[in-house]
Image (tube, rainbow, N blue to C red; front, side, top):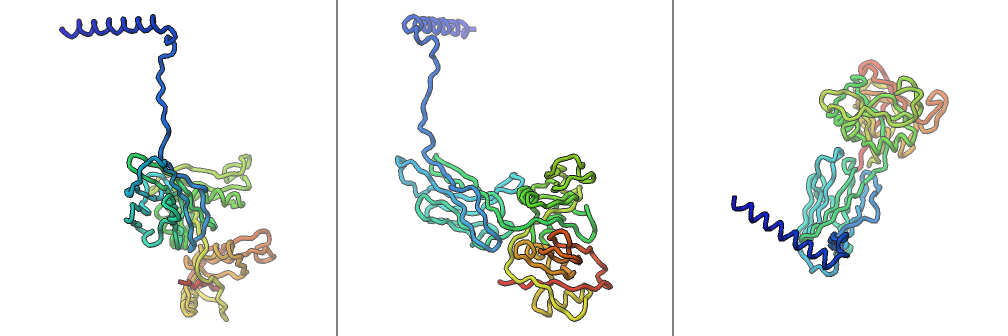
Length: 355
């Protein structure tokens, strides 16, 4: 109970003090907000371009320049860290860390990444021997004592998106099966940005497929009733995020340039699937994958009007110049299905890799 009189006295004293201030300085009556000025961050990072385009097998430099207040004392322990953001943005994957003379690369990036280091303020990252998995967003973070700054740069790849389903038929892949299916065809699961770019390039496909963020979507350029409605505008139709274990769809794969030779193997007779596999091996090659055919067709202009076996047991052929009996209306990779491997006879497409 002794605290109450003390509290009352304190409030009275504060009220008297305020009244005295009001009497002595009436101009302060409506100006009691106090502003504290800040000179702003004394360290920041920036990128002259936030998107870099390369290709599989090539190199790329992701820009990151440090802007540091000259009043800051030199700090040999300034830390530069590069991480890769996952497609669902739930975590970051370590790529490269540098502090003074100590440098370290991680995981699949080991031995393929280093700082450009054109000056002490250059934290740009050089990636060599780019893989399909390198596609995505990277964060450059610089920590200098209590000061820090970050910037995000996107590594894009030249390539092609293609829809895929296995011999089992349509809508048989959960997300993890879809990842394996693309990998088996020399590709990765496409991102939304890659599918959007393919849609802008007139990709039109009425079957829903997985994307790398776990969503299920499909691109429509010619609206029609079974594909979201004929009165709907063209666009990317979306089912949203789906259960990666329980839900089953097709998949959209992405592939890029390859190091090697894709070719149709000239043979005196048509072949069963097993004969086709052995024929490529005898020629010092392997039976080609679906992704390799799409890359050769789209990126190298490969054109051949002969249906041939591919590694997944499908039969396809690539046409860049539409013509009668091949692909009369459009340039496309033509699909002849998954024939009986033991009894149906076709040519074969082979791939000979270059190390």
